[in-house]
Length: 157
Image (cartoon, rainbow, N blue to C red; front, side):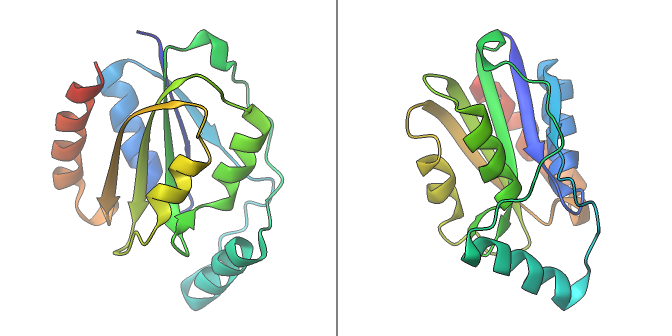
């Protein structure tokens, strides 16, 4: 089964998870990157990210070389921002126009998912969502995340 792992990561948590999943499944790794690469920290990061979600702002993305037709399974990963998938993931999904694909979802967060996974799934309503998982503070709990990933990928094959 040809698989792609497409993800957006701001602080590296989703990168860690995506790389582990891709290595385990021998999948293609497709990072989503915004044109604005400035890293905000602390309260400014929370304020900036939350404002993007609340105001519905979609960041411009760097070009992504991705053809959905080439894959049997598409795994999508996003951090949770203000109880939602990151705006960069939403921007990607609007551009990619995925439809009729088998997908699996993962989200990374610092402690609260809120309704983020349901919002993520609603962005993919014309697709078959095979599985979903979330990871809490991945970079602080790498071994736990590796165990979760190992068990989760078994359900995808």
